Length: 246
Image (cartoon, one colour):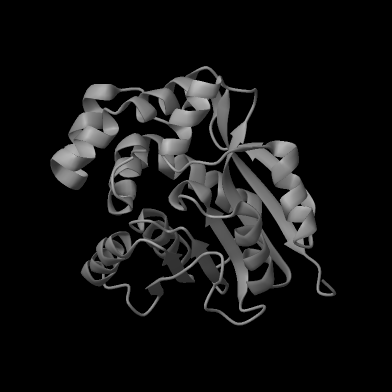
């Protein structure tokens, strides 16, 4: 995997907004019943595509945090260009130790594909800590549907992607005090990763030049796409509610 600064570029190429990513976020909006008056936190906001879309569509106050300063710099530039500085707040931060007070947000969304090497349990615990009573935590999480070969698992690990079985993700949510869990496939038939490789290369070039192209054409990325196509690896949406007494 290339330097972490290129991760957002790679995902922009593999998950084109209008073909893949927008549909996923439409499903999340329906699942969490988001409303304009809410305060929303995005953990793992990457280059900010989803944050900007949510701010525009909901007219909500959206906060984004990501450990990658290059991704945050790109997202911040897009926020200024669109004149959304009054609605959108972005910062570099550790998803395992959020710089927010307890129960500060009505809705928290965490995107684990943008958090390479992060401890999933700690990230979920932090998300549950900063969401208000009766608030919702929604995770976009890589999920094993069956076991990969050792070589496939090793190559996926090189991308910083750490999938779990859905039952394990649910356990993380429960241990963090989240209840009423609902799980859905983010996209069916492996379509959460683009298989149109000429367009992947073009998007990678536009997003990050040769470094992004090399990343997109690497063996770990081809392994990722193959696992998604074979339905060994899925992208799931998992929603939980925080009870006030937790």
